[in-house]
Length: 431
Image 1 (cartoon, rainbow, N blue to C red):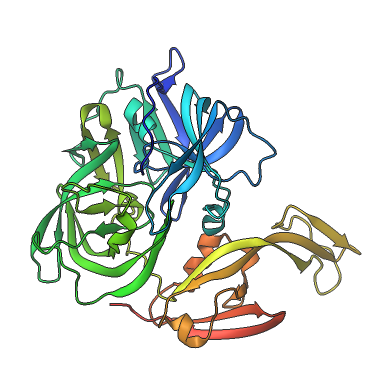
Image 2 (cartoon, rainbow, N blue to C red):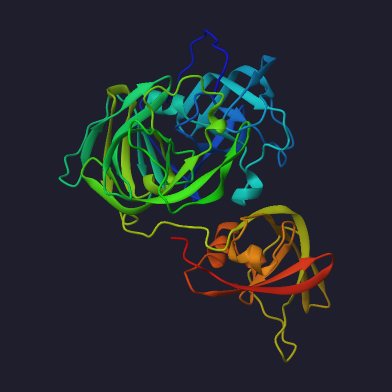
C-alpha cells in the first residue's frame, strides 16, 4: 500500500515492568483477528504483516469513536480499481492489554463498500501490522490461538531441535523470506516471498519466464480476494512442493494473480510472490524484525489438506432475518437451556422463539463450478445445507459444509424471490 510520509515519532511500548503481553486471538478464514482499543473504543483488527500503517474501515456497529488531528489523503492498495479517499489521523491512542502507543498514525477509509465483516462473519474494524512487528518480538501460536508480544531487550530463545531459524529481509516496512517452489516438471525455483499474515490464501506467485515461474497447465480462473483498490482475480492451481527452510509441503495450493492488481506497486524488486495464512498456520513462529530473523516450528496443522472451494460458492452476511424455532417437544413441554442464535428474541405462548439472526447469501459463483451448473445464483439466500439450518453455524462453518470432500452430494435449501427451493450438486476434484 502507498501512503504519504509523515515525520513524527510513534512506537508501541509495554507498561513499565512488563516484559511480555499475551493476547488471545481468533483465527477466522486463516486470518488473525486481535482485540484492539482505539482512543478507548474496543475494536477488532486483522493482524496483517503486509500493511505498513493501521487502517480503520468499518464502524457500523460502534456508536462513536474519537479520531484526532484529521486531514484528507488518497491511498491505494491491491486491486484493479481507482485510489480511494481516506482520512489521515494523528496522535491516536492504541492499546492491546499492556501494549500501548500514545501517538499512532491512523488512516480512516471513507468508502462504505470496503468492509471485510460480511465475508468473515464477525465485525472487523481495521487492519494493523508493521508497527507491532517492528517494536516487539512477536510469537504466534496458531494451535492455541495466542500471540505474545515480547520486549526485544528481554526476549530469550529457548533451544528446540524442532525449530529452525531463518533470515528475514525487512524492506519498505515489509518482511520477506526465501523459499523454493517445485513446479509440475519438478523443477526447483528459488523464490523470495512476502510474509503476509493478512492473506487467507496459501501462496501467490508472479509469472516470470526468465526465472522459470510458469503457470502449471492445470489451472482455473478464480476470485482470489479483495484489496483496498478492488477485487483481485487470477489463476488457481497447485505446485508439487513448497520448501521453507527444512520444511516441505506437498501438493500445495497456489495462485497466480492478475498483475493488473499490482499496478499501485511501482517496483516489486526481486519479489516473486507472497505466502499467506493457509501456509503460515501450519507453523508456530517467532517474528523477530529487530534482528531480521524468524524461527518456525511445524505444528498440528502441518499435514492438513489444503482447502479448495469445490462448490464454487462464495458467501457473505447480508443483514439479518427472523427465524422461528419451536422450544417445546412433541408433548408440548417447553425445553429449557436451549442455545439461542440471535440478539433479539420474541416468545409466543411459550412454544415458539423468534430470533434475529444474520442472513447468509451467495455473493459470487465460479463459472463452470458444480454450484453454477446446478443453477445456484448470486443473491440466493442460504437457508440449510444437507438438512442443517445454517443459522446455527458460523459463516466459515457453512463454507466447510459446502466444500466437505470430493464426491459428496450437497443439497442446499435456498430462498429466491420469496420462494424456497432445493438445489443439489456433487463436489468434484479440481485437479
